[in-house]
Image (cartoon, rainbow, N blue to C red):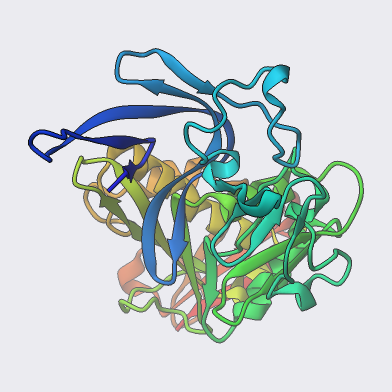
Length: 360
Protein backbone atom coordinates (compact mmCIF):
# COMPACT_ATOMS: atom_id res chain seq x y z
CA UNK A 1 0.00 0.00 0.00
CA UNK A 2 1.34 3.40 -1.01
CA UNK A 3 -1.26 5.80 0.40
CA UNK A 4 -4.27 5.67 2.68
CA UNK A 5 -6.74 8.49 1.92
CA UNK A 6 -9.00 9.95 4.59
CA UNK A 7 -11.32 12.93 4.69
CA UNK A 8 -9.02 15.96 4.50
CA UNK A 9 -5.72 14.30 3.59
CA UNK A 10 -3.79 11.08 3.31
CA UNK A 11 -1.19 8.91 5.04
CA UNK A 12 1.91 8.09 3.02
CA UNK A 13 3.34 4.63 3.65
CA UNK A 14 7.09 4.18 4.04
CA UNK A 15 8.35 0.62 4.31
CA UNK A 16 11.17 -0.09 6.74
CA UNK A 17 13.50 -2.26 4.65
CA UNK A 18 14.92 -3.99 7.70
CA UNK A 19 11.64 -4.98 9.33
CA UNK A 20 9.35 -4.69 6.27
CA UNK A 21 6.94 -2.79 8.51
CA UNK A 22 5.02 0.20 7.19
CA UNK A 23 5.45 3.57 8.83
CA UNK A 24 3.09 6.39 7.91
CA UNK A 25 3.65 10.11 7.48
CA UNK A 26 0.52 12.28 7.51
CA UNK A 27 -0.31 14.98 4.99
CA UNK A 28 -3.27 17.36 5.13
CA UNK A 29 -5.19 19.38 2.55
CA UNK A 30 -5.82 23.11 2.76
CA UNK A 31 -8.82 23.85 0.56
CA UNK A 32 -10.78 26.88 -0.58
CA UNK A 33 -14.51 27.48 -0.03
CA UNK A 34 -15.59 26.14 -3.42
CA UNK A 35 -16.96 22.69 -4.15
CA UNK A 36 -18.35 20.17 -1.68
CA UNK A 37 -17.10 18.09 1.19
CA UNK A 38 -19.42 15.09 0.85
CA UNK A 39 -21.37 13.03 -1.67
CA UNK A 40 -23.97 10.30 -1.97
CA UNK A 41 -23.85 6.97 -3.78
CA UNK A 42 -27.27 5.39 -4.12
CA UNK A 43 -28.85 5.39 -0.69
CA UNK A 44 -25.51 5.41 1.17
CA UNK A 45 -23.86 8.61 2.33
CA UNK A 46 -20.13 8.77 1.69
CA UNK A 47 -17.86 11.46 3.09
CA UNK A 48 -15.44 12.78 0.47
CA UNK A 49 -13.17 15.78 0.14
CA UNK A 50 -14.75 17.66 -2.77
CA UNK A 51 -13.27 21.13 -2.32
CA UNK A 52 -10.45 22.55 -4.44
CA UNK A 53 -7.18 21.52 -2.80
CA UNK A 54 -4.86 24.52 -2.65
CA UNK A 55 -2.07 23.23 -0.42
CA UNK A 56 -0.72 20.04 1.07
CA UNK A 57 0.97 20.39 4.44
CA UNK A 58 2.79 17.73 6.41
CA UNK A 59 2.35 16.77 10.05
CA UNK A 60 4.80 19.50 11.03
CA UNK A 61 2.71 22.18 9.24
CA UNK A 62 5.27 22.67 6.47
CA UNK A 63 3.79 23.41 3.03
CA UNK A 64 4.73 20.66 0.59
CA UNK A 65 2.56 21.42 -2.43
CA UNK A 66 0.63 24.45 -3.71
CA UNK A 67 -1.85 24.48 -6.58
CA UNK A 68 -3.69 27.39 -8.20
CA UNK A 69 -6.38 26.96 -10.84
CA UNK A 70 -8.00 28.54 -13.83
CA UNK A 71 -11.81 28.83 -13.38
CA UNK A 72 -12.62 25.48 -15.01
CA UNK A 73 -9.98 23.62 -12.99
CA UNK A 74 -6.77 23.54 -15.03
CA UNK A 75 -3.76 23.90 -12.68
CA UNK A 76 -1.38 26.79 -13.26
CA UNK A 77 2.05 25.91 -14.57
CA UNK A 78 4.75 25.40 -11.94
CA UNK A 79 6.44 28.68 -12.80
CA UNK A 80 3.13 30.52 -12.25
CA UNK A 81 2.93 29.78 -8.53
CA UNK A 82 2.43 26.03 -8.21
CA UNK A 83 5.02 23.99 -6.36
CA UNK A 84 5.80 20.28 -6.32
CA UNK A 85 2.81 19.37 -8.58
CA UNK A 86 3.62 15.66 -8.71
CA UNK A 87 3.56 14.98 -4.96
CA UNK A 88 -0.10 13.97 -5.08
CA UNK A 89 -2.73 14.26 -7.81
CA UNK A 90 -5.96 15.11 -5.98
CA UNK A 91 -6.68 18.71 -6.92
CA UNK A 92 -9.78 20.43 -8.37
CA UNK A 93 -12.95 19.43 -6.46
CA UNK A 94 -10.69 16.94 -4.71
CA UNK A 95 -10.63 14.82 -7.87
CA UNK A 96 -7.61 12.92 -9.16
CA UNK A 97 -5.78 14.71 -11.97
CA UNK A 98 -4.90 11.97 -14.47
CA UNK A 99 -1.82 12.84 -16.55
CA UNK A 100 -1.57 9.44 -18.28
CA UNK A 101 -0.74 9.75 -22.00
CA UNK A 102 -0.80 13.52 -21.62
CA UNK A 103 -4.61 13.66 -21.52
CA UNK A 104 -4.67 15.66 -18.26
CA UNK A 105 -8.27 14.93 -17.27
CA UNK A 106 -10.01 14.71 -13.90
CA UNK A 107 -11.46 11.39 -12.83
CA UNK A 108 -15.02 11.97 -11.57
CA UNK A 109 -15.80 8.26 -11.46
CA UNK A 110 -18.53 7.94 -14.07
CA UNK A 111 -16.92 10.44 -16.44
CA UNK A 112 -13.59 12.08 -17.19
CA UNK A 113 -13.53 15.88 -17.16
CA UNK A 114 -11.29 17.95 -19.45
CA UNK A 115 -10.73 21.24 -17.65
CA UNK A 116 -8.95 22.88 -20.62
CA UNK A 117 -12.21 23.06 -22.55
CA UNK A 118 -14.64 22.70 -19.62
CA UNK A 119 -16.22 19.57 -21.05
CA UNK A 120 -16.92 15.97 -20.05
CA UNK A 121 -15.68 13.12 -22.23
CA UNK A 122 -19.19 11.67 -22.50
CA UNK A 123 -22.78 12.84 -22.35
CA UNK A 124 -24.70 13.74 -19.20
CA UNK A 125 -27.14 10.85 -18.52
CA UNK A 126 -29.81 13.47 -17.68
CA UNK A 127 -29.08 15.62 -20.74
CA UNK A 128 -32.58 15.28 -22.18
CA UNK A 129 -33.88 17.29 -19.23
CA UNK A 130 -31.60 20.23 -20.16
CA UNK A 131 -31.87 20.91 -23.88
CA UNK A 132 -30.56 24.46 -23.54
CA UNK A 133 -27.13 23.27 -22.32
CA UNK A 134 -24.64 21.03 -24.09
CA UNK A 135 -24.70 17.45 -22.72
CA UNK A 136 -20.91 17.75 -22.37
CA UNK A 137 -20.93 21.08 -20.47
CA UNK A 138 -19.53 21.34 -16.96
CA UNK A 139 -21.71 23.00 -14.25
CA UNK A 140 -23.89 24.92 -16.74
CA UNK A 141 -20.80 26.67 -18.16
CA UNK A 142 -20.46 28.74 -14.99
CA UNK A 143 -17.85 27.22 -12.64
CA UNK A 144 -17.46 30.46 -10.70
CA UNK A 145 -21.03 30.36 -9.34
CA UNK A 146 -21.85 26.65 -9.40
CA UNK A 147 -20.46 23.21 -8.81
CA UNK A 148 -21.66 20.45 -11.10
CA UNK A 149 -25.13 19.63 -9.71
CA UNK A 150 -26.08 16.02 -9.06
CA UNK A 151 -29.67 16.85 -8.13
CA UNK A 152 -29.76 14.31 -5.31
CA UNK A 153 -30.18 16.31 -2.11
CA UNK A 154 -33.89 17.20 -2.31
CA UNK A 155 -36.32 14.37 -2.95
CA UNK A 156 -40.04 14.92 -3.54
CA UNK A 157 -42.17 11.80 -3.43
CA UNK A 158 -45.83 10.87 -3.21
CA UNK A 159 -48.89 11.26 -5.45
CA UNK A 160 -48.67 15.07 -5.69
CA UNK A 161 -44.90 15.37 -6.20
CA UNK A 162 -45.26 17.09 -9.58
CA UNK A 163 -47.73 19.59 -8.14
CA UNK A 164 -45.29 20.49 -5.36
CA UNK A 165 -42.45 20.83 -7.88
CA UNK A 166 -44.57 23.13 -10.06
CA UNK A 167 -45.31 25.35 -7.07
CA UNK A 168 -41.57 25.57 -6.40
CA UNK A 169 -41.02 26.35 -10.07
CA UNK A 170 -43.34 29.34 -9.85
CA UNK A 171 -41.50 30.52 -6.76
CA UNK A 172 -37.99 30.41 -8.23
CA UNK A 173 -38.91 32.12 -11.51
CA UNK A 174 -38.15 31.41 -15.15
CA UNK A 175 -34.35 31.59 -15.01
CA UNK A 176 -34.22 28.17 -13.33
CA UNK A 177 -35.88 25.08 -14.76
CA UNK A 178 -36.83 22.40 -12.24
CA UNK A 179 -37.46 18.72 -12.93
CA UNK A 180 -37.75 15.45 -11.04
CA UNK A 181 -35.44 12.56 -11.90
CA UNK A 182 -36.64 8.99 -12.25
CA UNK A 183 -35.78 8.53 -8.55
CA UNK A 184 -37.82 11.63 -7.60
CA UNK A 185 -34.77 13.79 -6.90
CA UNK A 186 -35.20 17.50 -7.62
CA UNK A 187 -32.87 18.74 -10.38
CA UNK A 188 -32.30 22.26 -11.64
CA UNK A 189 -31.03 23.85 -14.82
CA UNK A 190 -29.98 27.49 -15.26
CA UNK A 191 -31.77 28.69 -18.40
CA UNK A 192 -31.80 32.48 -18.09
CA UNK A 193 -29.20 35.24 -17.99
CA UNK A 194 -28.68 37.66 -15.15
CA UNK A 195 -28.95 37.38 -11.40
CA UNK A 196 -31.21 34.71 -9.96
CA UNK A 197 -33.86 35.77 -7.45
CA UNK A 198 -33.40 35.02 -3.76
CA UNK A 199 -35.73 32.02 -3.78
CA UNK A 200 -33.88 30.46 -6.72
CA UNK A 201 -30.55 30.91 -4.98
CA UNK A 202 -31.97 29.43 -1.77
CA UNK A 203 -33.35 26.36 -3.54
CA UNK A 204 -30.14 25.75 -5.49
CA UNK A 205 -28.20 25.97 -2.23
CA UNK A 206 -30.40 23.27 -0.72
CA UNK A 207 -30.04 20.99 -3.75
CA UNK A 208 -26.26 21.43 -3.84
CA UNK A 209 -25.70 20.90 -0.12
CA UNK A 210 -24.42 17.32 0.10
CA UNK A 211 -24.46 17.36 3.89
CA UNK A 212 -28.24 17.78 4.11
CA UNK A 213 -30.82 15.60 2.37
CA UNK A 214 -34.48 16.61 2.39
CA UNK A 215 -37.21 14.05 1.86
CA UNK A 216 -40.50 15.83 1.22
CA UNK A 217 -43.49 13.50 0.99
CA UNK A 218 -46.66 14.74 -0.68
CA UNK A 219 -50.17 13.56 0.15
CA UNK A 220 -53.77 14.52 -0.50
CA UNK A 221 -54.78 13.58 3.06
CA UNK A 222 -55.53 15.82 6.04
CA UNK A 223 -53.38 13.68 8.32
CA UNK A 224 -49.70 12.83 8.35
CA UNK A 225 -48.24 9.34 7.97
CA UNK A 226 -48.36 9.10 11.77
CA UNK A 227 -52.08 9.95 11.90
CA UNK A 228 -51.84 13.56 13.11
CA UNK A 229 -53.98 16.32 11.66
CA UNK A 230 -51.93 18.89 9.74
CA UNK A 231 -52.68 22.03 7.76
CA UNK A 232 -50.74 21.86 4.51
CA UNK A 233 -47.34 21.00 5.96
CA UNK A 234 -45.76 19.13 8.86
CA UNK A 235 -42.24 19.08 10.28
CA UNK A 236 -41.48 15.36 10.71
CA UNK A 237 -38.04 15.68 12.31
CA UNK A 238 -34.63 14.65 11.04
CA UNK A 239 -31.89 12.10 11.51
CA UNK A 240 -28.26 13.07 12.16
CA UNK A 241 -25.60 10.59 11.05
CA UNK A 242 -22.23 10.72 12.80
CA UNK A 243 -18.99 9.02 11.86
CA UNK A 244 -16.69 7.15 14.24
CA UNK A 245 -15.08 10.45 15.30
CA UNK A 246 -18.41 11.99 16.25
CA UNK A 247 -18.46 14.28 13.21
CA UNK A 248 -21.67 14.92 11.27
CA UNK A 249 -21.58 13.34 7.83
CA UNK A 250 -25.23 13.76 6.87
CA UNK A 251 -28.57 15.02 8.12
CA UNK A 252 -31.77 13.67 6.52
CA UNK A 253 -34.80 15.90 7.09
CA UNK A 254 -38.40 14.76 6.68
CA UNK A 255 -41.33 16.98 5.75
CA UNK A 256 -44.87 16.09 4.73
CA UNK A 257 -47.03 18.43 2.64
CA UNK A 258 -50.43 18.58 1.01
CA UNK A 259 -49.83 20.67 -2.14
CA UNK A 260 -53.58 21.11 -2.70
CA UNK A 261 -53.94 22.87 0.65
CA UNK A 262 -50.75 24.87 0.06
CA UNK A 263 -52.03 25.97 -3.34
CA UNK A 264 -55.20 27.38 -1.77
CA UNK A 265 -53.06 29.02 0.93
CA UNK A 266 -51.24 30.89 -1.86
CA UNK A 267 -54.47 32.66 -2.86
CA UNK A 268 -53.26 36.04 -1.61
CA UNK A 269 -49.51 35.34 -1.86
CA UNK A 270 -47.03 34.73 -4.64
CA UNK A 271 -47.45 31.21 -5.98
CA UNK A 272 -45.20 28.73 -4.22
CA UNK A 273 -44.83 30.80 -1.05
CA UNK A 274 -46.18 28.12 1.27
CA UNK A 275 -44.40 25.08 -0.25
CA UNK A 276 -41.13 27.04 -0.23
CA UNK A 277 -41.67 27.70 3.48
CA UNK A 278 -42.21 23.98 4.13
CA UNK A 279 -39.05 23.01 2.25
CA UNK A 280 -36.87 25.62 3.95
CA UNK A 281 -38.36 24.70 7.33
CA UNK A 282 -37.03 21.16 6.89
CA UNK A 283 -33.67 22.54 5.73
CA UNK A 284 -33.33 25.02 8.60
CA UNK A 285 -34.19 22.28 11.07
CA UNK A 286 -31.46 20.11 9.57
CA UNK A 287 -28.93 22.94 9.92
CA UNK A 288 -29.81 23.36 13.59
CA UNK A 289 -29.56 19.62 14.25
CA UNK A 290 -26.24 19.49 12.38
CA UNK A 291 -24.83 22.14 14.68
CA UNK A 292 -26.15 20.35 17.77
CA UNK A 293 -25.13 16.91 16.43
CA UNK A 294 -28.45 15.56 17.68
CA UNK A 295 -31.42 14.28 15.69
CA UNK A 296 -34.69 16.12 16.13
CA UNK A 297 -38.12 14.55 16.67
CA UNK A 298 -41.13 15.87 14.78
CA UNK A 299 -43.03 19.03 15.73
CA UNK A 300 -44.79 19.23 19.11
CA UNK A 301 -42.41 16.70 20.68
CA UNK A 302 -39.91 17.40 23.41
CA UNK A 303 -36.53 18.65 22.15
CA UNK A 304 -37.86 19.23 18.62
CA UNK A 305 -36.16 22.08 16.74
CA UNK A 306 -39.42 22.79 14.91
CA UNK A 307 -40.15 26.24 16.37
CA UNK A 308 -36.72 27.63 15.58
CA UNK A 309 -36.76 26.01 12.14
CA UNK A 310 -40.21 27.48 11.45
CA UNK A 311 -39.00 30.96 12.40
CA UNK A 312 -35.83 30.65 10.29
CA UNK A 313 -37.66 29.43 7.19
CA UNK A 314 -38.80 31.70 4.35
CA UNK A 315 -41.77 33.95 5.12
CA UNK A 316 -45.24 32.45 5.29
CA UNK A 317 -48.36 34.62 5.76
CA UNK A 318 -50.56 33.72 8.74
CA UNK A 319 -53.19 31.00 8.59
CA UNK A 320 -56.26 31.64 10.73
CA UNK A 321 -58.47 29.15 12.57
CA UNK A 322 -62.17 29.33 13.32
CA UNK A 323 -64.26 26.89 15.40
CA UNK A 324 -67.99 26.47 14.85
CA UNK A 325 -70.72 24.73 16.83
CA UNK A 326 -73.49 22.59 15.33
CA UNK A 327 -75.52 25.74 14.52
CA UNK A 328 -72.62 27.40 12.72
CA UNK A 329 -71.84 29.87 15.49
CA UNK A 330 -68.22 30.82 16.17
CA UNK A 331 -67.05 29.48 19.54
CA UNK A 332 -63.85 29.36 21.58
CA UNK A 333 -64.21 25.96 23.26
CA UNK A 334 -62.65 23.21 21.12
CA UNK A 335 -64.58 20.56 23.03
CA UNK A 336 -67.85 22.04 21.73
CA UNK A 337 -66.61 22.48 18.16
CA UNK A 338 -68.56 20.68 15.46
CA UNK A 339 -66.39 22.02 12.64
CA UNK A 340 -63.01 23.75 12.35
CA UNK A 341 -62.02 25.95 9.42
CA UNK A 342 -58.58 27.21 8.48
CA UNK A 343 -58.36 30.14 6.14
CA UNK A 344 -56.21 32.92 4.72
CA UNK A 345 -57.26 36.49 4.06
CA UNK A 346 -55.84 39.59 2.38
CA UNK A 347 -54.44 42.49 4.37
CA UNK A 348 -55.71 41.27 7.74
CA UNK A 349 -59.32 41.98 6.78
CA UNK A 350 -62.30 39.66 7.07
CA UNK A 351 -63.30 40.21 3.45
CA UNK A 352 -62.73 37.60 0.74
CA UNK A 353 -61.50 34.91 3.10
CA UNK A 354 -60.28 31.72 1.43
CA UNK A 355 -60.89 28.51 3.37
CA UNK A 356 -57.94 26.18 2.76
CA UNK A 357 -59.01 23.24 4.92
CA UNK A 358 -61.79 22.06 7.18
CA UNK A 359 -62.23 19.36 9.81
CA UNK A 360 -64.04 17.13 9.57
